Image (tube, rainbow, N blue to C red; front, side):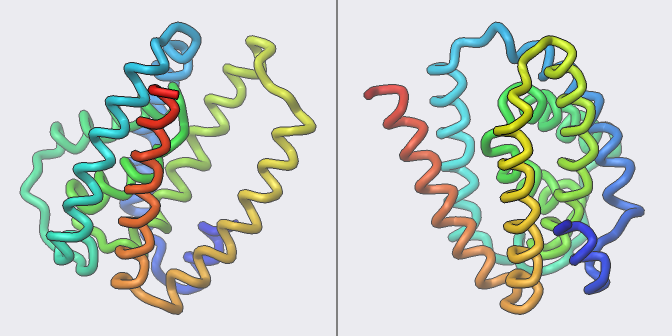
Length: 192
């Protein structure tokens, strides 16, 4: 998978990834149980606003994304950031990578490449837990899920190789573009 590709390239820090994965997984359990009862329009508009802010930061604060840096956040703040991201991830999944990338830059001080490596471990762990809850509730379409999983694995490996080869600046601009397009699509979906 992508995480293994990053590990082989020596950019994955399990020392950072595993504790954050545990916190995020706890939040994802809450989010998964909330997923059944939510107003999707409100959620889409909220997410569009948040990821639009992320796009602004990607463009105008490159140092936040391209270099490792010290963070001044307390462990309590980091816990709440990743717990909240976990709730969102267990709840809707779509776009959680943006929030994890943002959280990792803000709270852990990692650059985009290392952040993507850590993100893969976090998402992999909490998805197993969320999948089990959704499966138990009869909400999993196994054939479609297997196709999606296969495509995600191929994309993760290719993306990891590309990220390591091209560097943080490339990834920052690609991510900014994807974030803007995602925000536009979410707003369009609400009003169409």
